[in-house]
Image (cartoon, rainbow, N blue to C red; front, side, top):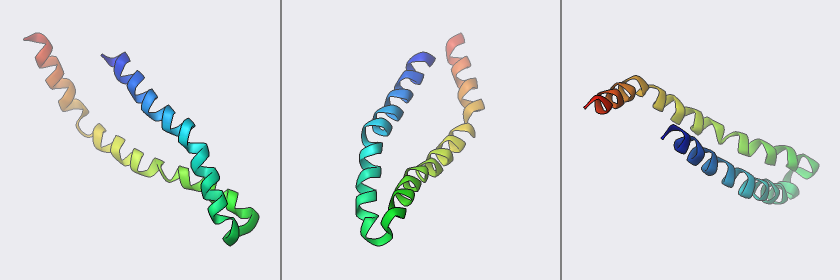
Length: 79
């Protein structure tokens, strides 16, 4: 089950990142080009980094319940 969860996590993290990430950065760079000129690429590359903020918050929220979840899983496996 742990390997399957890791595989699903990697799948949903890799496909959008590799498939849509470059497209997003290129489109954002083209959109920002009239306003920032050559610096548009810099700002376009900063935008995906901001996605790590909500991801980190979600991982933090998940970590707060990990001990309770493990205890519940152990109770279920002994029954």
